[in-house]
Length: 63
Length: 158
Image 1 (cartoon, rainbow over the protein chains, first blue to last red):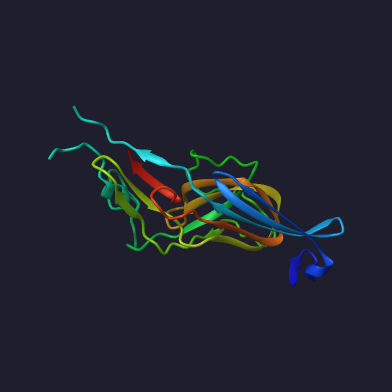
Image 2 (image 1 turned 120 degrees about the vertical axis):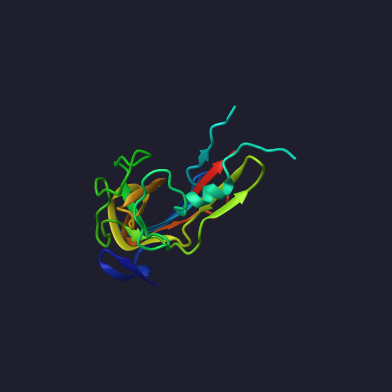
């Protein structure tokens, strides 16, 4: 598979693939990195938001 | 039967579609939905509830990223759901993931500002996530479920 890198498209067989993830109350995030020797040549990330800031409204009570 | 004081849930939904105006509203050329955009901000920036308008201050820069960010897909109108005599929620969520394709963003970023590009870039919401960098890759922000409890924008009476 070809991977877009800072050096152009490279075959993934030439690269070291590293993956990671974070899962908490706010997000589920995954990322994929490709390394050429000690150089990071590609990094993509995918953040899935689980929720968002909540806004509560209240009208003034009469009487 | 009895009467109960509350803001009307329909009103919450109508706030999201500019139906009511208690002050001075901008003149609208069309009745269709506005265009909303998402801009990314550095982890070192100060974007918060006090932000009133899109700003380039603190915005990410890098190969493949255009200042102002990308247009948000808005194919689903806001929904207003009443749950009791005193409670209800109006909500809206972008109808597709927000994707920044083939970018290199070398300085850590952790925020997307949602803003209204049809109304002088006025700010809507600030959404934060774990700090990221992107190298010759894609950054995708998938929206939460469009529901009364999880949607991206929720106005609620309790």
